[in-house]
Image (cartoon, rainbow, N blue to C red; front, side):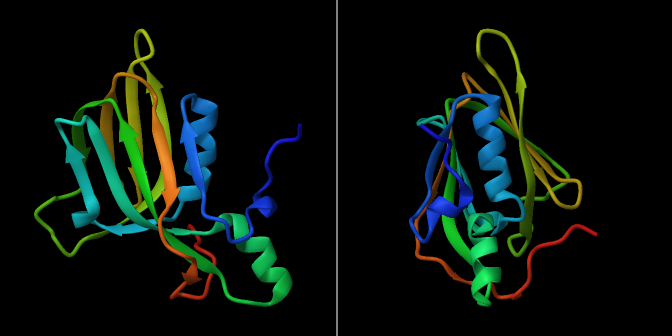
Length: 157
């Protein structure tokens, strides 16, 4: 059986899970340059769940869009981390309700017995650190793709 490829996605919604750092690297690549209002981050303490409703660039569709000469797409997705014990942030102010954040990467710093820290690295030196019992991250597209408002591929610099 061959590994999945970006091109295999077409317009099908993504629904991926990560339980290893290698799995998380795939989700990290897919949410790179995703944007979201700070108000769309939520920590459900009782459920030990941290979730973000974000607008992610459809990296898996980039080559097809270019080949077809059509615009690039974004899609709304839920990025969820389960088994969260605590949440800390640095470089962002939750009181700024109009703040729009952008994800650069997701990283995992392993601890003891499978526990560790999921790091959401944000543009502008912001970080959200999630202390977790185990690495358990999901990414699920929840809308149909739509044309990216900027019409461009996100860039860094």
